[in-house]
Image 1 (cartoon, helix red, strand yellow):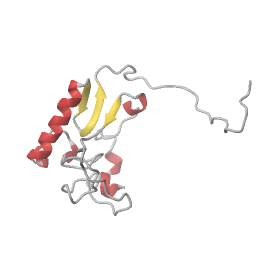
Image 2 (tube, one colour):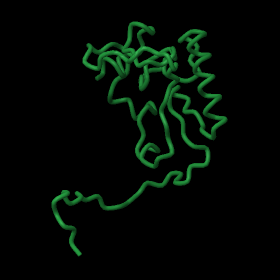
Image 3 (spheres, helix red, strand yellow):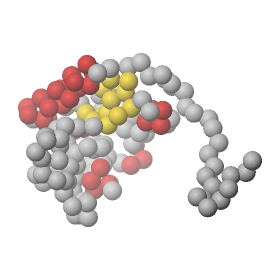
Image 4 (tube, one colour):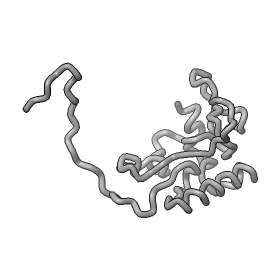
Length: 145
């Protein structure tokens, strides 16, 4: 997946560069990752197509159906930084529009990923969950009483 999601970044550096964190706010239900897809958009590209760099221009990279944000979604590259002007005026405007909408809805942007937003008032801020995970009984088994 390097070809598509981090074509110019060393995988070993993803944590150090802040693209990945442990623990993740995603697992607390306080983080969303999204873009804007026009109502009348074409369906996304065939998921079995060959991988293409997320840093490639719109129309050349994987088509996910979003308006142009300058990079693909989950692009671990400096071009994915929210305020990176190298993506061009239209993409930068689209990023700022998305950021403005989400801030108005109570989310804060993450500067290194235009698609990543966390709740301002996260109910479980910084706290992970510690609970046992076990397999559920199959549908033909009677639960123990």
